[in-house]
Image (cartoon, rainbow over all chains, first blue to last red; front, side):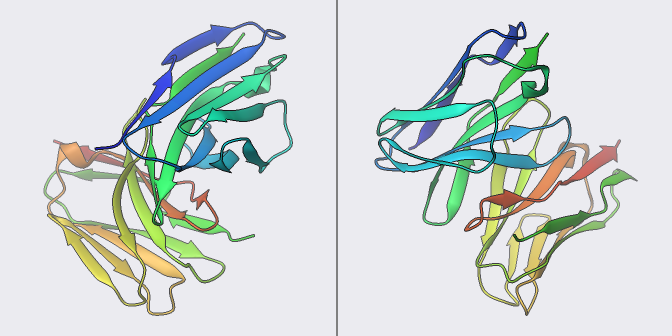
Length: 110
Length: 107
């Protein structure tokens, strides 16, 4: 069966520091991969999606970037965090019209 | 850009009551998913509907897709505290989510 992992689970970072969040998927090959951000108690905003290694599409101009160095690895990064980058970050994989989410990373920028 | 509107935004009911929440779109869905999310966790897929007029049941949950494929409803019968959570609808092809309905079921 397929599983999706995200780490870390929680992160507190100062403004201006770099960020690296990692997501890996097991049990499937060539999945579509997604990064979302969720404000407190609200819906999900799509940040990036990838249909293959090295292929990244950005939905929203922002302070973040994404990379897919391997088929089942998706990384969300920032060179310098802003206060507005705080939120709940979710990675998901999709296939055959459905998406499955990881457990999320709670990021607090102080 | 397709807009997904969910209503109500918040719903608080007593255990045993029935409820319905709604998801409406400004354009036709290619396919629609319903998710449930508990605090601090990722959303969990409940169902996917594709065909206009389709009805799917998952235990006490009934999902209906409108004939015109621009709206959907989720009906819960005899709600239980375990049903508490944020219910999200999503259009897969657009990868867009509604803002959700936050349901609280009180014992």
